[in-house]
Image 1 (cartoon, rainbow, N blue to C red):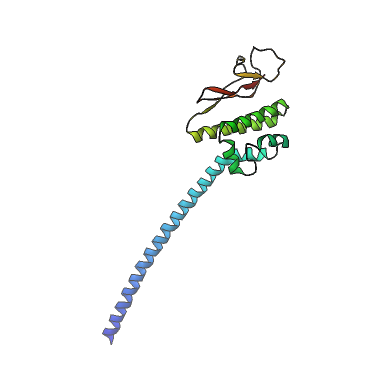
Image 2 (image 1 turned 180 degrees about the horizontal axis):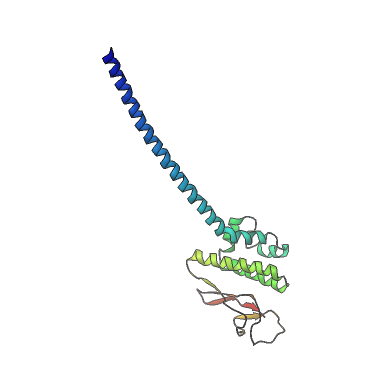
Amino acid sequence: MIEGSNSELHKIKKELDDKSIKLEEAEEIIRKLKNDNSILSEHNKALEVELNSTCKDVKKIFNALQQIDPKYRTELEPYIRLHKLEPFIVSSSINIDALDKIWKVAKLAIKNNELELSETIREYFEYMVKLFNEAKHDEVVTIDNVKEGDYYNVHDYECIDPDKSYGGVINKVYLPGFINNYNHKRIEKSLVD
């Protein structure tokens, strides 16, 4: 009876030892999973920050354009989808015609002496040119690098005041023009004073 009890006790002890080993293995797996989860959570947070910062500029532009005067929205709407962010991005940077339309609306705001609005639309234009070029993997469109102090050139610049004589030095840049690098044609002249 004692031998049977010892054998039974030995068998129970072995089962307990086996279960203890399995428990330790399971605890180690849990520790590794918690560590992996922590690493993935940190990586996810970093990606969210990156995504938010990447989209921050376009969201800011999109939100600003929601507030503009309807006369400017009416000018943009045949070309640009202004109701949702994703179609807005795609339609704004899909082709040179869309970029040109954005530029023309900025010019219209300048001509109407709405300089704050024109600056918002200018930022929008420049951002979409950047996206357009990135999507094409090439610098298809180049924005003029015109600065105050440059000499006026009738071929590259348009004076905001049609009564001013040609020539002289640029005092203010309202809106840079841009060129299609594929065919080397100027799409719009820089609007200056």
